[in-house]
Length: 188
Image (cartoon, rainbow, N blue to C red):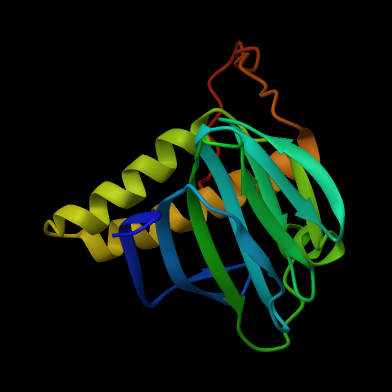
């Protein structure tokens, strides 16, 4: 397949809704880059999420260089120039999600966080690796319910990406203190 190996590359616009805004997952990909991904930018309402799963290299985001390695998450929004470079003689493997927000609705906190930060690079939350694998497996295996499950997994992946941007890679693992009397909480 040449210098850039692709697996699980799906397009066709799986759509999911977040805070009343339809997000169109134009492409989900899993690629190994052995050559430079040339500098480019995307149009209005387009966001690209990259999760590095293997290898080492760097990414230039609006001419600023960042080291990338497994667990690094970076986001590029509309008009953000970005270029990815593997280490010399090496490679970078990444899970990629290419999203387009439809319409002009503002959404809530998640979408406001996305729109207010058109470029970000940092450590992703641990569960992003697992979620990316689940998304790829659902698309690859095409089992009963795969479309519906993929929609939910994409939404969950998106939410965890925004949480990584806002909260950092560290997660709150402790459960809340249990209540002493029986209280029922309605599921929202």
